[in-house]
Length: 332
Ligand SMILES: [Fe+2]
Ligand SMILES: [Fe+2]
Image (cartoon, rainbow, N blue to C red; front, side):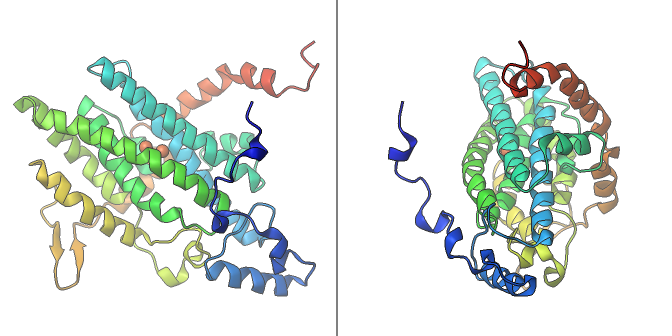
């Protein structure tokens, strides 16, 4: 077996923990520590799990990462429905691999969140009781195979725009985890685009199927990053937990993907959508924020069914966790 200590460090020097040299880990009065912490974070420094951090920072990172983990976990359910119905063996294998990747992302992110002090069981309790949320796009049904292409291509694309910015997060473990996740997400996007390309170059009814899927998903996609917010009042931005506002992310998504969608001859179902050269930004019909609020509070078309699936699944697999996590000798 390879001795892990004999391997070169994977992380470049600037990505590694430097906790011994950090003044806020010293025994200082709270306000002084806080000032050092604040100066370090706002200057672009990283925070590691063993560093001292204000409770507000810890809980803000935890809330952000937990929602992300929940979304990866719940996000596989719309695609899971199509594993057995994928049209070819190659598609079935690719979709299965994607679903495995997404569950792996949830696993990595729950670990990051656990380090911040919330046990995984508590995160599951909260998710299943509706006390924490998951992204809006995962509350909708997948009606046809074209939905699977649109999800992998455009939902993952909207997500990666946000996730790429998170590679610079001030919380070190989250930033590093996002590097792996982004790499895998970029493969998901290629898979989704290939599914969509195959359908749009197929029969007229396959092409119609893609257009109908785009019509269904455009609204949720435009809502996905959330309403505009005031940069100066956003503490997640101030502490560099995240790097971009919701509107900046939506604009970037539109800049990259509107041309790519149109290139395939598809019509984006928004007559107001256009790039305003003077303002240098996209104009669009205001997304339905009421729908977003309804859906993310678990009143979406598939919210309850998917949470119920997770509840039943958790009960059915409890014996596995009990066997693995029990004290040595307890099973004897
Ligand atoms: Fe993912
Ligand atoms: Fe993905």
